[in-house]
Image (cartoon, rainbow, N blue to C red; front, side, top):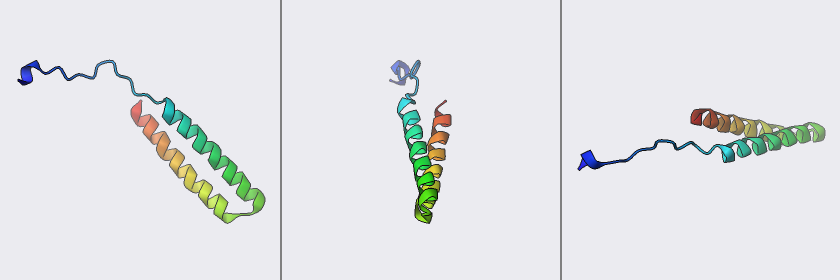
Length: 67
């Protein structure tokens, strides 16, 4: 039966549009939190911004893996 199997993935491109949007939104949130933390002198906002930056890097690595 395996001779007649036609399981192929030719021509299927990965959809990276949503991933790019997620990277942009996450990075924008990171910048807003970071500068908000600087202005308000809040260590909690600055540390959360750095945590969001690591999430942005993880999303970027996922994007590179799909290319």
